[in-house]
Length: 292
Image (cartoon, rainbow, N blue to C red; front, side, top):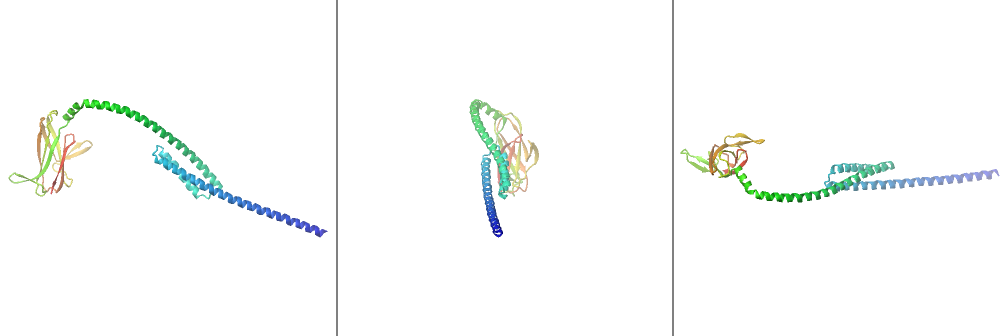
């Protein structure tokens, strides 16, 4: 009897242990299955979050391309998105990290939504402003037409004032000569033979201009960028003007022929540039010539 009782107890214990073993195996399987499922879900969440970040970064690129006034703010927020994307891609994708990255993304997305709304408002305001400017332009165009009419009516007076303010310097010519011992001058285009440069120009008749002495500063620059002649300097606004010689002319409302000479030696071959300036250092005539 006692032996049968012991056997029954042993069998019961074995059954209980077997049941516990099966339960443990089932529990471990469930945990493993849940863990794999969680890893799969977290990986999916990580990929989804990365794609959303890339999409938002691309949206920022489109906004920046609009040359919006918010360009600096948009670029700053885009940089934050790029930094977060790098963190997400490098992370292992655990639950704590993903929760943190999701929170950061939602915050940046909210800031982006605000920028999008502000940018939209600015565009609408620009449209309104453009419309207002168009209306103003119509008014200004009308005013301009009226002013143009007045200008036409006063054209004769304006031309008279312009005539009186300046004298025209015309027919500027420069050529090289070789002077013989007899005093005769022979024109030449050979640098080695030349010993003088002759400069001539006309001051045109102007019945409106004031009579009196007029000064013209003549500047001759050789092919080596050297200024010939006196090489004296006068102030010219916030700069200076270096000239070859001054030609002083007595003007009496009639055409004046001006003839000057610059003596030299060893003239360089090449192209020379000649400029004539008035007393205000304003260029009134220019020409060039070439010596072989």
